[in-house]
Image (cartoon, rainbow, N blue to C red):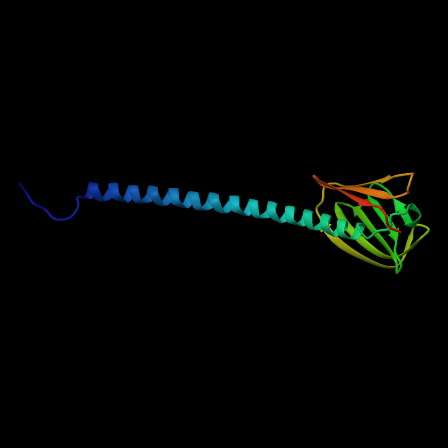
Length: 156
């Protein structure tokens, strides 16, 4: 019986093949995981942007006047109301949500400041419901797939 030290060439090739297979599997797993995490990150950022826009609108709309005569314009994609200092408008134009402040008279803004609140929204809809009895307004706003109702009651 011959005693040799070391590996034969066949054993070395088998170990190299197993090592290469293991490296390929680990590399494939790392790349797949990274792509999935990037998609998840983009989706999470879009969701955060959506809820941030909705919360910004809701916070300001809750301070809006509840009486209909203080509202300059109410459409499906635009709301404008009067405050003590100036007029405030929210509008959805070309997939972006804007907040506008200034003076709105006869359909024209004067001394306007227009801010982009959120870009890339596929749908924004404002539904204003009026209660004829007490004249309060409630707003149902839908940003993409998120819907929120804001009731403006018992305020002047």
